[in-house]
Image (cartoon, rainbow, N blue to C red; front, side, top):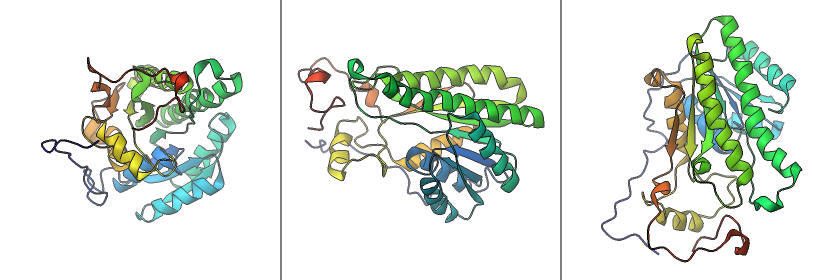
Amino acid sequence: MSLPGHHRVYEAPAFDTPPLPPDMLAGKVALVTGGGSGMGLGMAMALAQAGASIAVFGRTAETAEKGAEELRALGRPIGAYVGDVRKPDDIAAAFDAAERELGLVTILANNAGANYPVLAESVSPGQWRSVTRIAIDGSFLCSTEFARRLIAAREGGAIVNNSAQYIWSGFPGDAHSAAAKAAIATMTAAHAADWKRHGIRANCVAAGFFPHARSNTSNVMEDRTGLMIPVGRVGRMREFGWVSAFLCSPLAAGITGETLMIDGGDSLRRQLMSPAFEPPRDRENPWGNVP
């Protein structure tokens, strides 16, 4: 499988040529949940590139500190804090520590999450909670802690949440994650309405396929997957991060309560004539195999 010769693939700019000015978020402090790896680290890198100090909030000290080390190479003040986003006391402690070391947190990026393929009829209550509580409870508890502090300080701020493109379509083997990510998108709109008079904006990024170190994918798989996406490639972590940082920046001062989809047109793939549908339970992997 290959792209036709006339199909042009446009690549994202290189990481060292970011689209946002390096001082766009100067003086701002961003707390990023799940910021030590994956898409959370992608958001953190972009926010740091735009001038923000970063508080990496992770489940384990090893992952949080590893991500913090990568971020320090960008020359910004960075802190690493350990805790569980499902526990209000851990969240409050992370905010307290970040404020002492870096300053008042005025940007929150909710990325903490978990996902794995399992058919809906096989999901145990424990599996359901392992995905939904981190995503829904974690995003809610972190957002409300963030908002209460800013309201008390009479300061405005911005929240950016990590959702997914399949909240509108579902995805085989992903009932737990689709439900959680859809809740995040509607929660974003509700928070934007609740906190608009306090100058707190809340937006969401619904991402398609953005491979990263924890994706457990090969370059061959990513290349083949990219051929099935209308733009001809998978997403680049840096562009996901830049879109997220944009939504937290003054350039997006008039945007709140929105969910922005960045999926390379993947949601447009539906067509009349397609290969025969294979039921998820008949597949080796419910998420499907790359041809």
